[in-house]
Image (cartoon, rainbow, N blue to C red; front, side, top):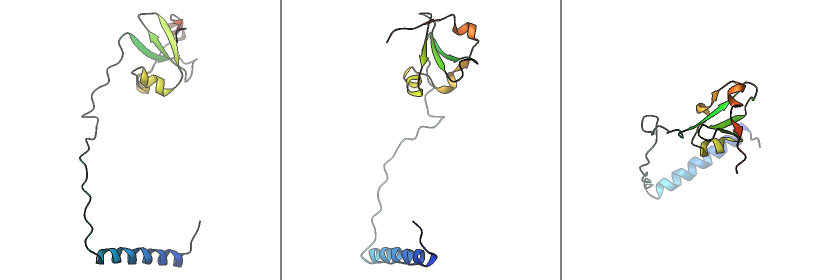
Length: 111
């Protein structure tokens, strides 16, 4: 939708007239803001990575990320970022390994 400059000025004038009319009825009470604790890098607790697991990719796997379970000796394809997060990892936790390293782990057929 497009309006002309004159129409825009008229619209702004109407808005100001309405606001001026509201002010004539009395002052507007301020809304109390709730205190909200904002998490910053300084206040955020460091993420503790799952013990005995790591997330990797290889040059040949491209964007495919795998979760390696050191204890079981298995690998599982992590199909989306939500699963990565659910496993306790973030994208910056993914490291690159050689194909031969990835192939040392058998495919996890559970779940």
